[in-house]
Amino acid sequence: MIQKTNGIRMAINFAKEKHSKQKYGNNKPYIFHLIGTAKIVDEVYNKYFKNDFLYETMIISALLHDVIEDTEITKSDVLKLFGFCVADTVALVTHNKGDSYLEYILQIRGLLASVVKFADLTFNINQSEIELKSKYDSYKKQRLEKYLLARYIINEEIKKYTDKTEEKSNL
Image (cartoon, rainbow, N blue to C red; front, side):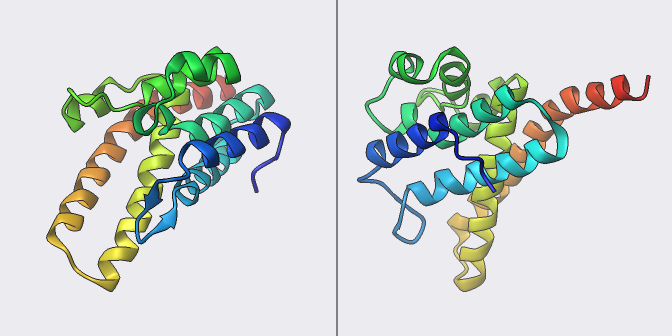
């Protein structure tokens, strides 16, 4: 269950407003995707991390992860409203149109950006699997395979941080 701090409430409202004209999947409001991604970040956080600052930053970043890519909002706008860590994380998970999808995935570095992207991919994978069960579509199957490979790559990046945490706790 996502903790609803003032910052998280502000991010939910901001995301709803900025993505209000967008739809996700089978015509759901786009906030469905953003909240779903934030819930997965919450699960990952509760399993691996215990830092209140990190929690709010991760959740807000998950809620805003598509705002630069899909709206008129800039990194500077996010910086003014939500601070450096959120702005930097959101910028790191923004797919620049000139980059191939693989180039984009390979450039994602750092714990916060990797966890947010992992959650985004996991949500998309789950939704793609649901859609494929109801109606097979070769494009959706290819998209699912792309997401699975990308999540594997991002998971390897996350392991760099979680493995170090486990090693330190064993000392």
